[in-house]
Length: 335
Image 1 (cartoon, rainbow, N blue to C red):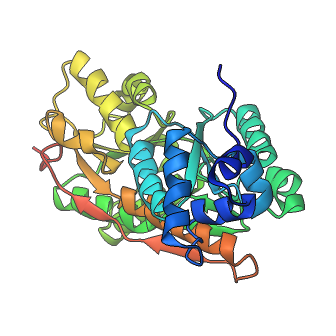
Image 2: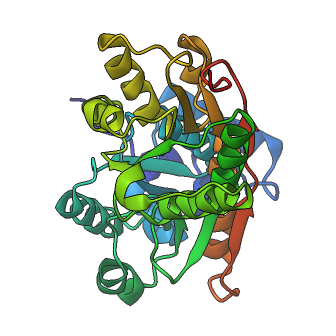
């Protein structure tokens, strides 16, 4: 490997000081002549000079990076969420470092510690497993700014979320309008934002005079296609006319399980998801879902965190975005 050109080498070749080179390369060289600026920039290209990231961090006291901790990057929801983060952070001159811990608490703690050691400027935490204790032990002592998103129910810190309660309410109203009264929920256990969806769902059913018994009408599974698929027999055992899945991934997994058993959607069972991932429009039948503004969530999460980084003493902020019921062909009236 060839010796790396340093800023001192570049300054020597240009016949100027290191400070002059640094200011020109960082867009602060307006006080220097156009000839000097052009000379430094031309030599930078000719010598293939790449700034030393660690040295820059020491000088600027900023890594211009944010850490993003996700529960499952394989979920298309989080892929779209990251797209929004990338758009906003790039515009601000930051780079996101993205990690998916697959719901493993030890792995999430490991990534948090490594990100802090690498002096990230802040963190977006979308994982439910990162607890108040973890934040108190790892982030707060070093005053690392952070933002909580979606599944995480830690009470402190800035937060961005959607109106999950309203989403569940909209599903209940839609299914009740189609004549469904025996509706099964396919949900995970003990996830804050999912519990809010159930609360809104039950509220909507109550307004329609429809009883709901959690003990017999909730089937539990993981928030994945595999989780939905594996829960198929348990769902069918409840003899529902409709199923409300906690997210689109579970709904699509259930699709496969139902198809393998000769159960038709929506002729035999209507299915509703939650998230609004792109794949919903490319399955048969197209999935009715509660759509979240996913990319906007990523953009606003980034903006909120960057605001916290620039103003650490600002009051805690919480943002809630609306959701929308998108009715497609996976739901129909009870026959």
